[in-house]
Length: 459
Image 1 (tube, rainbow, N blue to C red):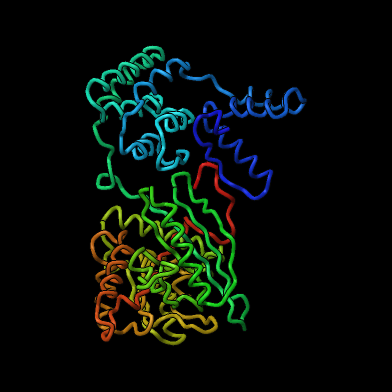
Image 2: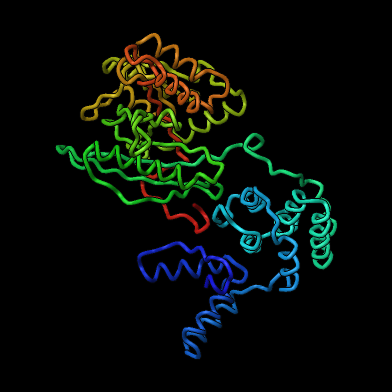
């Protein structure tokens, strides 16, 4: 297939034969010349059989008319022969959008052009390959730019989109908007950790990952791992290393989340190293925004209505006011049953409370009904605590600043900076950032119970 296409066919590898063949067909389906080339290759392998006749019928039904003739393609790629545009991959991602087929970083003009042909035009009505050529014309020498725009003009006349093209052309400059002008898109790797059995030292680690959330939340689950805590830490570092490598070409803000049962909520997961092997380990919470989430609440559908209500309150406050006012947060006090009754009553009366600062860290033993359980049941989406002593003055001051500084939506980013400062501090004088845990729990992104698999275009 690669020989016939004249460039590598980048199909995902699978150990099972059927899955591997399906991957090849899917990859061909995303290229205008892919299915026709596949048919040609198959006919060389098994000519004249009933199976090939059926394949030909199916491919004929699936194939669409080409937008450009072979001579027009040769003319375009002849103009681009030997021309180097360094940011071609960035231009492709900008023109194609978030659901674009993935291409290798060292891609070619023909690969980009073919991939863009598989995508629908945007609201402007101009085919994406023409927009791509316009971006190239804005980056090359003037004489070549004239030739490229003339080629695009000829296509627009034939397609009847002259006015639409003129409007698009006025918006194209010599550089693609970069990170400074575009909001960075969040990408997630979510870990779930729980004991394999009540009396064992073994833990089960599950994980999900999703880079592009534009089509919704459909995280891809990886294989589980069972092992001791040291093995789990090493596996987490390897998986985090993996997304750091796999998502390097993309403009993604990688966020790491741990879904934990209450008995493990106080684990110092943000202090685990993010590299599997390192001579000088760096805590994960310094390199990424790291938070914990509640496994019990995620599994208890009866608590979800209040959870959604308060999450919407949190988002509305961020949008409307840009800050969490003091009344939106609640400072718990450790205590017995009477305190828990009062806390429950307060949350029932105050629907605008969205954040809770704990009076004591969650217990590490068997789950008991405590202030954490009250907050989870009431739907509080944000909790903050010190893993050893929630009464420390430094912790109280830090928590106030984190919660009530302008734009609470950036709380996890501010927490990362606090942890980074802690890493730079004197180890003889413990910094609050080394003991700071934040529960940031989004009901719109759950992994328990298991959700349907992602659409094919979602990574």
